[in-house]
Structure formats: structure tokens, C-alpha cells
Length: 329
Length: 265
Image 1: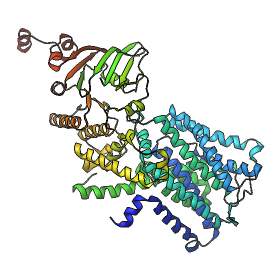
Image 2: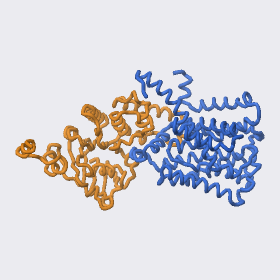
Image 3: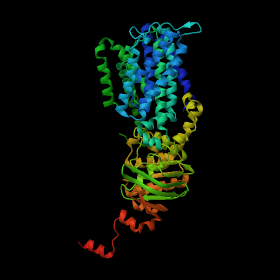
Image 4: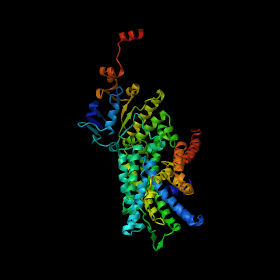
């Protein structure tokens, strides 16, 4: 093994610093107009949500359809804090994360009793309740949405255009992916997976099932909260309840399913692909839901582990053949 | 005394699945449990490992801890490990992940360490993985470490379940029909591995098994359940000749006269 590989293995954050540097160069080298930076920011926001969703759904196996509600909580915490107190990004981001974590606890409590489709219904109700709560009542400026949410500035430098805001969203995304990586690679990720596979056996093997379930919900809620705050402050800084409907939830789900449920890079791969496809099919907006619904169904039918699982499988078969000299089907 | 139950009772509605059972187990003992289907053997395991809550008035003590109403994950933390009759493998996880998940109670680092992803974590994770690979090669599954558990054969699954239960280095290991559905050769192989593991880790064993040869050959003491009650306890040879046991489980004993009649027909 090369020296570099050992270094990465011992200090995974070095890999993330390298990724940071490469991504920081992307706008000046590849992007030709501002819109592409805007799209990239959307991709990063979606990656953060999908990485969080992968923790609770892919790893912990708790089917949640209310995640978009948590995303909305993140956005509206940031939005209302600006609207009534005039707070900026650096204050609203941590507050949004903490507030969303509490909502995550509330969303996770039904999982103690409910499973599978029943839990999906309960969380769907939760997510929709949050949206309806925001939509009704003038406190959240539901009719016109909250606009002119300011972009962050750091030491006099204002990230006020999409190509500048790119760096903020990229940093948050890399930090979020790093956390999800280290959580899921550790014993916590294994505990999540065993709860997904068999909660009774997990309990008998010494895993506190309730604690880990709620932990998964809190962690993924924090991801959604951070993404929501970044989304709210994204130029032009406008949020409206219509951006947090079940349609968005289906898109998030499509990302995780297509990328690979329970695969460490699953949500990330899916978020990149789906966001780009979503943008390219904008002229066909009438058929977008059809396309994503079809994507989910076809992926589950023909590639149950998504793209990530598919790639993993290919390399595994190669290694297995090398080791034992036999074909494994 | 590593495990002790007093007046252990469990009823499901009107059915008494476990009826006032007193049970005592010494350290390093190998205890066999036999009895017909539905006699309460698995219920006994579920009660002791905390999957079911026992009825009021029961008392279970494990290694000096009162575990009567303790949740299962805490009991596992005290060092009690068990396997399930229906295996309950983590189907969609790799073989090595299955075993490493079994190690959960012994994972040395804290949650914060894991989130931050310090170097220490990756060193410890690697050490755990090496240790678990050793365990896998001991049961003969090292080559399959990266495959999904669902891809293993029936015999291999039995071995994997065993390895997963051992991974937490328990003081007491409770095996629920470890050899069910295995061919005679595989049964011998499995029992050999179990005995080697017992010596290696200094385990105390309780084995539920329907293959009487296994129970009679390996166990120091045998307990017989029927209708949720303990109907006999003693050395294998003593239990084998006990009238109540023969009636309930082994089938009626025939004398020579009856045997001749039965064969003549």
C-alpha cells in the first residue's frame, strides 16, 4: 500500500481537504455562467439532505416521508429569525440546526412503536403538518413568502452572488459529508444497520434500539436543518411554503434510492444526478413527478441497492474471484 | 452461580408458558435443555435474555446482577449472549459486519470521538476488524467475509450466528438449537467448534437441542421442560432413564415383550 493511501486511511479528513481544494477550483475552471453556480449550490443543499436521509432511512431502516418538513423547519427558523430579529447567516445556521434536531426527536418518537408503511404514514403526517402550519397564518408570511434573506458575509467579504455563495454551500456540504462518513463508518453505523436488519437481535446483542433510533432521527434532522438554512440564505434569499411539499420529498427519496440505500456515498451520488436531471427536465415540468416516480420504481426493481451498491458489487465479485478462484453468483 | 432464576413465570393470556421454574447454573458448566415443542425452552431463553418481561414474582439473577426487569441491551452488556432458533442474521450486511455488530458492547470509543472521526477511532476499528477476522477464520468463514450474509449456505449461517454471538466475549452463551437442520457430519464439526470456543474463551453454555446425541455427549447436566415446568434435572444418563422424561419427550419405553409384539405386526 502506498504511503499516501495509509495517510488517508489514518486521517480521512485529509481526503476531504483535498476534495475541498478541487471543488473550490471548479467554478473558475469549468463554469461558464452564474446559473451553473446556482445549480451547484442546489446540488450541495440536496447532498446534505440526502446524506441525512440516508442515515435514517438507508442505514437505520426507518421509513420517513416527513423529511421535507424538517428541511422546512431549518429554512423557516433561519427565515423568521431574520424577519423578526434581523439575524444573519452565522447565527441562524446553528440555531436552525438545534431547532430542527428537536423536531427530529418529535418525528422519531413514533418509530418506537411503528414500522414500515405505518411509520411512513406517521412521518408523512408530521411533515405535512409542519408545512400546513407554516402555510396558514401570517406569522410566516405564507402568502408572499419571506424574501430578501441576506447572504452571509465574512470579514467584510459578502457572498452575495451565486458564484460567491457557492463557497459557503460547498463548505457546509463537505463538513456534512465528512460527519456522515465518520459516523457511518464507525460502530454507530453498524448499530444502525443491525437495527434495520433485525431490531430484536440487535437488542440481544447489546444495542439500545430506542436510543439509536432517536439518534438517527436527530442526526438526519440536523443535516436537514443545516441544508434548510443554507437554502434560505441562498441568493436571492426567498422561501415559500410551496417549496416544501410532498413533491420535494419524492425528489429527496429518489436521490437516496437511486444512489443506493444504505450505501455510504449513496445519497451523494443520487443528489448530484437527480438535481441535474431535475434541472434539465424543467421544460417538461408536467412530467417531472412521473419521471422520478418511475426512477424509484425501476431502481428498486432492477438495481435494489442503487448505483452505489451496483458498483460495490462489481468490485466485490472481482476480489472474491481473485481470492477463491471461483465464480460467485 | 452465574445464572439463577426463582419462581420464573410467564403467561400469555391464560397459557402458562413458564411455570415457577427454579434454575441454577454454575460457572463453566455445559447445560443441555430438552423438551417437546412448545414446552417453554425458547420462552426460557427469551425471559432470561430480556426479550420478554417475566410475570411479577419472578426473579432472575445473572453474574450478581438482578436482571428480572432489565432491558435486553443491558443484559447483553453484563455478558450474556444468545443465538436465536430462527437465526435472525443481519441478511443485508456483510459477514464481517455481522460479526463486528456483535462486538458492539465492547466498542471502546465514545460517540463524540466517532463523529469527529479522530485517528484513534480508525486504529481501534482496524484492531476490532482484525480480531473479528481471526474469529471468522476460526469458524472457517474468513474467505466469505465480504459477502452478504444472505449469500451463505445453511451450515455457514449457523457458524456465522455462532461467531456473532461469541464476538462480544460473553460469560454465558445460550444456544437455541445450534445444530437444527445440519447433516450429521456438520453437526459433529459444529460441536467441535463450540467446544473449542468454550475452552478458548472460558464460556458457560446452555444448549437447547433436539439431537439427543449432542446433548448426551457434551452436556454435564440436562434440564427437561414440559408444559412450562421443569420435570427433571440431572446427569444425561440419569435423565435418560427418568420415567417422566420418557413419557413426555423420548416416547414410551418398551420392554422386550412389547418390542417383539410391535415388530411382529
